[in-house]
Amino acid sequence: MKLQRNGRSKALAIGAMALVSSLSLAACGSDNNTNTASGGSNGSSAAAAAINCGKAGTLLGAGSTAQAPAIDVWKTNFGSSCSGTTVNYSGGGSGAGVQQFNQGKVAFAGSDFALKAADVDASKAVCTGGKAIDLPMVAGLVSLVYNVEGVDNLVLDGPTAAKVFDSQITKWNDPAIAALNPGAKLPDAEIQTFHRSDDSGTTFNLTSYFAKTSGGAWSAEPSKAWKGKGGQSANGSAGVSAQIKQVKNSIGYAELSYAQTNNLKSAKIATGAAQPVEATAANAANTIASSTVSGTDGDLALSLDYGTKADNAYPIVLVTYEIACDKGNKAETLDTLKSFLTYTISDGAQKSIGDKGYVPMPAAIGDKVKAAVGTLA
Image 1 (cartoon, rainbow, N blue to C red):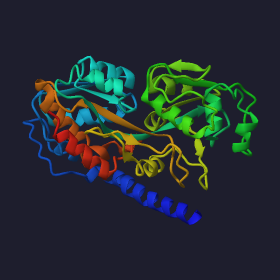
Image 2 (image 1 turned 45 degrees about the vertical axis):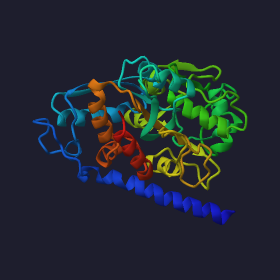
Image 3 (image 1 turned 180 degrees about the vertical axis):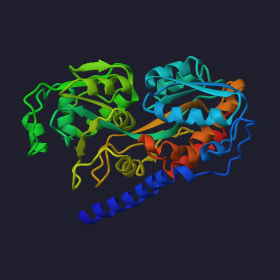
Image 4 (image 1 turned 60 degrees about the vertical axis):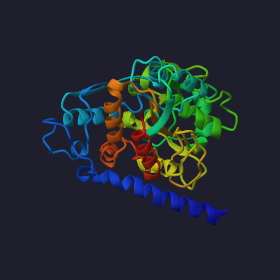
């Protein structure tokens, strides 16, 4: 068993190296697409040069705040390359994005959890002759961000973290936390927990991790709405991050990009691997590399291994899907939608968000997304 585990860890590490090695090549990366914008680009940006523009116009999207920093990069590159084209994306959370999509208010939605059957059924009202599908576009991780004076290398595991966020553990010097952090100067202070107030795919991924690893300490099913007891709420990942930064002895959760932007500390996770795993893009890549497509009938929803025990594999991973109609997209935005999504899944676009804490989509999955975008109608 030990040899099998080590072999699997080695294979995952090789896959992760292939994913993250591209991050350092972002400045020189390009692909074979042709920039067809007239006067939209000065040709100095490799990312811009990779864009094949569609019709001029405005493309509306909404949803996941997890991918907002990535979308900011992409819409700037796309807009600067494509004269007369603007991409407007509003956050508000995955739940709000799916709702707006199914109301016909936006051309695409960002969601950190795959569509439920009820969401797909509702989409048929706006996807004339078709339905909504999941297109995995942004890969990353959920950090357990904390602000505890004198504690720089906090370690948590599934059961302990679940109990903290469910108010079953309420003091920082609780024996369960102390056992995971020998030698740390844990204060005799109340734990201030923060969670999302909005329906959030980030919440769904965190609670999926709790459901898989807490040994029953987290009794609720994975959900986009917060089901834990106690704690305080804040809107969006930005709101949670701001609260953690301001409130002493606090802990919350947000994507790595928000942890980096706000200079927040992220807990290491004890998974059963040889060492507690740091919240880094490279370690998330190990887990993302082992994901498989579980969706059917054109849907590309992924199965993620929240319970991984592989060395250097960070378990609380997240994939943001772009939600679009497979058929029945509005004629006035279809061309621009396909052009924008073709760009975002391109090698150049995936590399361009590496310094924001994201993980390039594995090539095997990215190729499937490229093919699916090409068939949108």
